[in-house]
Length: 167
Image 1 (cartoon, rainbow, N blue to C red):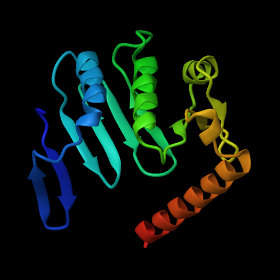
Image 2: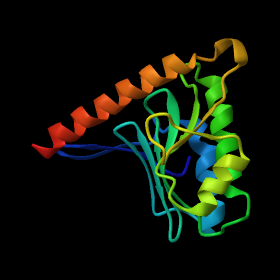
Image 3: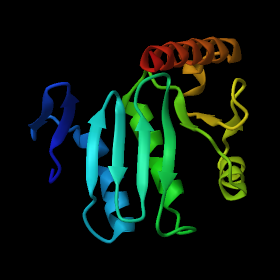
């Protein structure tokens, strides 16, 4: 892996090249190809994967019941990059039984809304600007009530975190 694992701490930056999870290598390669070379930033901080290139970026939340695409931009659009990212995340869900699937947050453009509908994502019951796609096998699927309870719990946890940060 060319990128070191970077963990920001109060007293500075700690770098350990042995700890960056190899399972994220396909995502990094996808963004490198879109960026026509190496990325400016590759790090995991507070359970989020950050990638940043000249004209591409990703913030992927790793905690919670979904892999959540919170921020995304590709330089080369309409090239199948988003579909490839979703395929990679679907494969990661197979190796992480705690994950229900993939969520795309803050969908505001018509193009992304169309992508979500075309690729089987449904609007989140708690946030109409977010779309979810449950990936787990049929017998493992949580009920709609379970998903709603998990989503409510995560929403409360996020609110509590924002309140702590605001103080």
